[in-house]
Image (cartoon, rainbow, N blue to C red):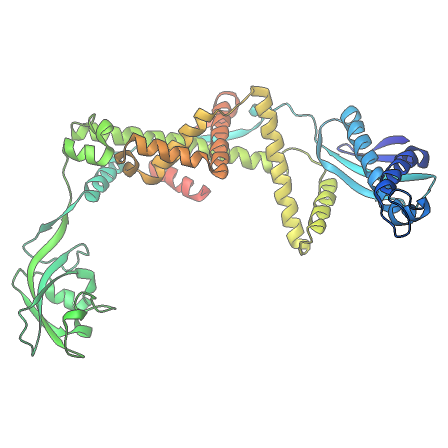
Length: 444
């Protein structure tokens, strides 16, 4: 047996394995004997079939099995001892036509490699954007909190342009003896011209017309069961004018919104404003780090990033596509190659950073990350449900492998962001809050 290697490029090596017939013949003979011992052939006792018959039926497949076993063992051993920084699986190039009792069998493989890596974070010139939380944004968050806790209250007159107004009305179908039926109608349900008539009106105002003349789109479902005629005229009398009345600050409201533990700390509106400012500041800092790692990702995965043997990787990818019988044209294959190159550059670079800084993700970190993700997704609702419910929810999420992997990835990227801030080539840029939000939206 002979194994040799030749550099194809600075990042690809060809390995050629020559197996002499004498290297494989004993294994083939041994396997054929085992098959013969179990082979059943009419006219012969079990284990006494003619060896010629056994060879005709099984020798080609046994030869291939033994050659594959030898090639796999010898190739992996040779690569481990002689070729460094390998990536991907060895790529099978070609072999001689395999026939029985050849003098030798030749197999050729390409091995893709990566260059030596130092994981130098200072090589990336990145920008970190920071901004102050404006009072206007705190006011807006405060307004949203109060509006989310709003309740219906009575108004004296109708504002025809206010979509949040509801009308408690009594309607009577003309030509019937009914006493009338109460129903609540939202102002946007009325046609624009009817809203103009309602504008400025007070409790007691009456309005008559056919269903199609009064309402937009579908007929109010609550009205239909009480109507007798096919196209009746109805009279509506306004009994109440209702609108959402935003809540005002109270310690009790804070407990409702944030739960008892956090709500207990918010005793004044100034406490609430400070809490909002702190949470917005944390969010800005977190999003700033995400933008930083996004910049780093684009740097790492771009063609000017880590040098890789593209031709060899393309050969490997084409083999995988053909093996899976995927019908991809040249453009689709080119797109897949770009994605594969980006994936390899990112993961190889990340692996080098993980090894250099000995980065790890613990179970407790994953639990905390999933908890934080749930808090962002469900807001104050998750806090109101209590710690026991949250803990059981998190445990269920921990059983979802995909969510655990996503959380682990978020944690690792957070660790990379911290390293970039300390060891990277970072320029801090102050921007306005609106500019920060615009950049964030553009990246998303």
